[in-house]
Image (cartoon, rainbow, N blue to C red; front, side):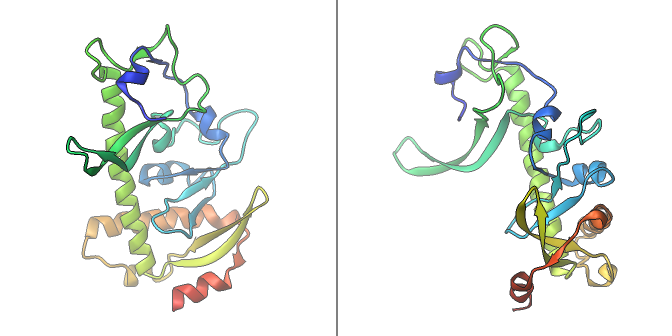
Length: 225
């Protein structure tokens, strides 16, 4: 649900350890900091869809979270997230787009009427706590854009091979990562980004050693056309 002062003026938010909610997912989208923290713990895939982020395949555990002490960046502010370029309307009735604040309506007790931080102050303005959430989400959005640029570098460097993979009975179209010859094929016009992309590729490649990939003839034909 979208957050508005009209609907949520009295609402309060109780901050909790969100790793439990994240651990219930079959996969978790990652940015660069997550890949570095989780590659040794979980297999990481690259979905074969445009602008998709790397995903850690979650393997539930009985004794601790699959993520150890790390909280995935896109989950740090759960149940809140930004919905980019949402359609709106300006004062003249013309269509416009905004990045809108969204709260997962399925989150367990995302707000509480008596406890926690208020979402809005007495003037119907976002509270200090909610402004902090929005600022953190904006920073993470920048990390998402950087990750997408890094994946495009790997695509251009021919470091990704189309594969199929089974996860929880679901057939996934993904990319297998290879760093062989990457130093020669990587575009280094943006040296810092290229360095980060190469380091990320190496971490993902290591995390994929336990995966049983199958050929994806259709995906390979598309890549070569």
